[in-house]
Length: 293
Image: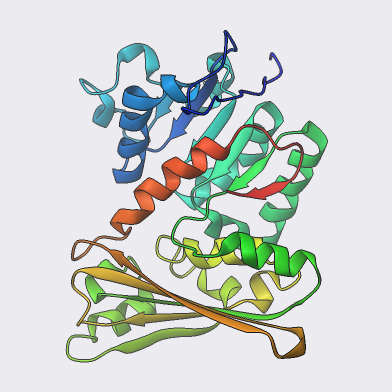
């Protein structure tokens, strides 16, 4: 496979000269995948991007919407499409099963970072990125101040980090004990979980990607050291809330509260879609490492 070439954009955000566009593969065609495909079709060229392929577990959802030549029938055939960056917006199992292969051939943006709560998967993908020279991108999504957290951690100054996520009970896709707790939150807010993020990710893989991104931004704490608090609140029908509390040395502390508009029952807030597009524009190749974008 031809090595990816860096794309330089001029001040208008357009590709300079006759440089080759970066080819983007989209894995997953849910709401987020559909949004990214449309943005690539509408705005990709002026940003030096073009669609390489779209894959979905149920290929019937692509028929009549995604051009046939861009549909990828078997995910294992992705090499044929010569993508420069592959974006997973499907399910954590895709990251666990195919992430290593993706990184050997291209940069890889993980839309389901809860998959990295599995230590073997995280270590395997870090190694693949390092050895292949490709970048493992972690989109910030709904994580506000992720780069600041990363800088604090890089400097050895971060001591504690807590991420609290509050959503309407209908916005949770959880089963078991958490599911029963969420169903019971009809009159007042209920704490579904409060503890290390690693234990929470497999219980709520579709709801706590923001927490997982925070763990990757703060590797000194990681999934075991970052604390996650998940709350169901029946009085939040129109938005999700994400609160970040970080403490550092010498009495340093910072707290942020982000209100993300979201339809009742929606797993992903509206502002997160645009954030993913912005993250994609950052994926220009940053070498064999993990990069929060």
